[in-house]
Image (cartoon, rainbow, N blue to C red; front, side, top):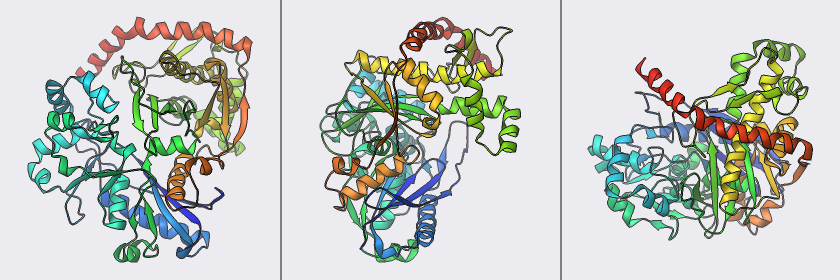
Length: 512
């Protein structure tokens, strides 16, 4: 075997495969998409066999295009979308399509569970609110509505776990994915007897839980013939996408922190014990190894707000950028740079899909507040960037309230490419912002870290994390910090003053 690491990130839209060497150099990447099904309102499903098909296609493609021999792949490892419910039988056959993280059909089951165990107790046990997003209520929905499938189910798995099963014939998950199910006791790292009793889920239908760096098994002869990897290649289980992004950002020690500025945007930090908020505004997942946790606060549409504005309001700019052969976001950033901090009194509330941290209000709505006749498009662009930063400041304040201290926050994700946005973040959060060398590959590289440690290429996560470098830092500008402090105070008051109107609009929208 060689020393190349093949990582797969099984996301919501498709599988991104990345081949790296032991120094973290990316040799090749490939992507293959798969379909998402919406049989009814609130139902969101995917076919697990599509995960396997995408894995096989990207694996064969990436090996061929990189020019390496399959025997040079030292290990394959995984990142994957979290909070799913995939029932599989003992023959490794999926019994229905996966209920993925976005599926919200199990609200009735959440109510049933909440009658048997206090929601506050659920949070203390699992580190998460009791919600339809998580696997427990999804599994209970299957039990109540598709009893034959539930009876025949041998185990319930996640996206990456299913592909690992196809490769190795082993029914496993890792602690990070397990901790996103509303079923794992994050304190004892065992399936919670209280949650098992409250949900009525059979404990033997839950997979064995291992560390993210554990070797699940090796590629079987049958799997080798299908995917093109050499029989006997080690397979490392990897982690949920949140855990992998955290590791890929080099956030592996207590008090390390980062912001993922993607379509959805979150802030995470590493702790040595669960960080539990009496107001349940944040949540705690298990990290790559026992004794480490990553704590997160998530906003629904961070980069998504910028994408929405670009797609909805910037047709002329898209045409101009295409004509000039530049990225439209670079053009929009140039427009916004000409505007003063505070966007001349214009504030954007980035609640385009409701909001999670810190509001936890699905009826929250987006808004531009303070529009006057002198406001033009550049002010609106900058207001979007600032509005996302203000909401991220709200999340930072929750962590500060709970005792976290930030001297530097790393930033990854597509939005991190914007020097202007990084500068706004530094000024609004009043903390140094550090851009990494791997901003869009962090999740894939986190999976590669798991694989490299599991295969012995790296001695430890700390050893692997040396590859992750800070390329640029932005210090807060004291003058802008003062300006944004006043704007953030106003931003924070807006939701409370408008909450009733948002809820009224939501009722009108649903009734129409």
